[in-house]
Image 1 (cartoon, rainbow, N blue to C red):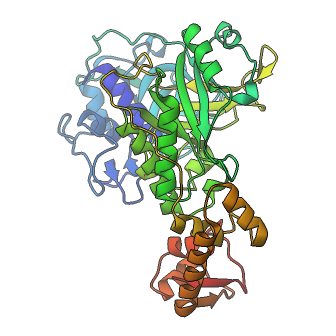
Image 2: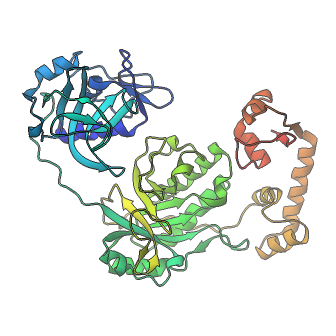
Image 3: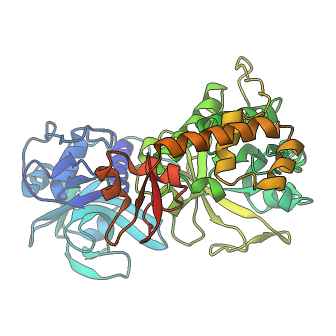
Length: 490
């Protein structure tokens, strides 16, 4: 195995959900139903050398076909350049062995992670009981991190015969930084960001959270910032603020976004998932996000998702969306951690709150981003990609009627004024509302929540699903219902 591939797989094993397990068969990268993987110390190394990957099927492990079923000591005995002098330990990928309490790890060279210094990857029952980053000093002493809690001492090391150490080392790539801007930074000169080392800019193109009569809008500063970014030779992306509550909404928003992008050399785009659209069913929101992203991808764009770390981990099924680039907001010194195995392409580490550097650039507060996975293209759309034409953003009568019932359009005279001002027939919509209400009265089944009830137990009792109950009753948090609450059963 090439050295860089070996080091990358060690990092991947650290990043995926995992835990320490020394049970035979379960210690070779076994993939559990809950999405976690299990290893122990030298079997982590054996599994990686045999081709372990995070895409391995659930219920399987990786037999040690490369090394054979050998112990940690036998692995050491097969190493070349064995030594006990840790002042000479320099080569990343070196096998580490602890003989006093048999254990193994891999030296990978010094690096910074979460504001601490590490240089070892090991799977251990100590500390967090998982694949961890730790630290070895020039005496062989083993620490949780440089200067941190100490636990035992490595005794030996050597070069693994199954790893090719002769390839050229990877070049040291300095961190890449970007900003994201909208009309709220109107008048800001992107040259000032470029001078301070920000080479990427992600510009708000528009959104769907405008007025009732005109929900779809173009950000007032989109064109200006785009022209500046082109002149300053920055990498350019764009984002769209979503407010979809249905698959049709998601398709309309995607088409609107495409119309705003038309004629601009932008490939990397993101769906901003926050605000009111988060207050809907877990599965339904997942489908909405997938629909939007796939529509953009079908039109020739590289579409990803933007929201906060907590929303990625709780509001929708991110495990089904890992194929889309993730732009994750977390205002902290510590990078975001996702419950899914998705990679964080971009980390928005600060805005008005910034723990890493000043929130202001040339006197203007600007959201700032760390680009973990740099874009590999020049940001221009291939000329042979057909761009979808925008659609007319008129909602169907059924869609409007459901929004009326959800309280979006108000009541009485105010409802009539809003619908008319938006160009819709109040009479048609209200007639459809009346039909739906009448139909519901005929078939409506309700249940009053009692002490100890959960949506899951109620759904099971009435042969329905939690998502259906959430959507039918407009429940913002499926984990919070209260005694006496009347629920419509669907």
